Image (cartoon, rainbow, N blue to C red; front, side, top):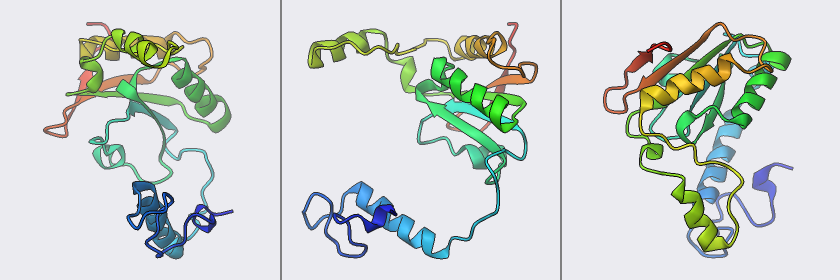
Length: 187
């Protein structure tokens, strides 16, 4: 069932899911999807990226990866998380991307002004104090962007689950200029 067909949302009704007259952000997104779907035509693609590349990047809203890298719909797999850090879940996604969907190259992108530069593992302890349970995941905060990109490249290059580890490159995206700066893995 399409999301707009849910009983709590009537397109154009002005009544949000919360029952107020003000639409929620999600209501606005669903309405935008209604407009998108009205003009949508199936591009006839499958899930295999045309360029056989997976891009791992931070979830930061300032990064428009397709525009910054000159990518079109269907060109790549885009895998995002806080910091663009290579975690076990990123390795899981890359493994599926490579083994099941044919990617061969990995591009890692961190960025200037990242929120993880200001966090520490104390964040987990603060959450534990608030909710009574410590998160099972690590914050993966860092103080040095370049070094964390190197560590992420190393995690990809040494994963036994990834059959394609030769074309792995890492970058820092400057959020004020839009430029990528490549990180030398051996520095």
